[in-house]
Length: 182
Ligand SMILES: [Zn+2]
Image 1 (cartoon, protein in one colour):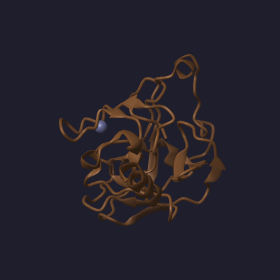
Image 2 (cartoon, protein in one colour; image 1 turned 180 degrees about the vertical axis):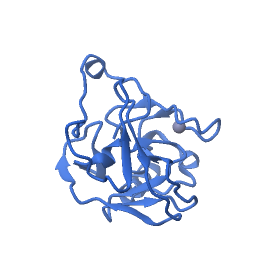
Image 3 (cartoon, protein in one colour; image 1 turned 90 degrees about the vertical axis):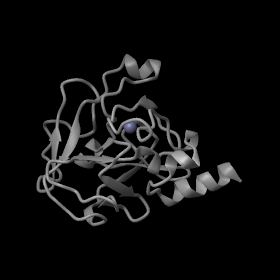
């Protein structure tokens, strides 16, 4: 995952040049549906949709994931499990008004349920829908506006039920919220 226009928040991250697992030398993994816009600055790359799809429909199956440690590129799949996507899907940035849901139980990426996807839309998902505690928290610049943008994105653990209202959440996040609030 490559958060939108963020500065790394840990001392180690800010002094390290981070390289995404797929680089410009690697052939595109989803050339029919996704274009990667590569920024010149760290964390400024993003994915753009090449296709239009109705709300709720399947965008892509996640077929190349491998178990991994928690990292800024990993996606959480369970209370204690994470994967690397090993594909251009890693360029889907966070947004508080996302276009996609990453369903890590079904290993599929779907268009959000309340909005159609249009060719040219940025491909984004709501990181707290899969991440309990982010590897690298960041200040969101998604531009969703007051009351919609959550600002500091640190994972679902730090968000209130009210903040999470209206978002599709992975099963492990629902479970962890239940534990937190019980
Ligand atoms: Zn935001």
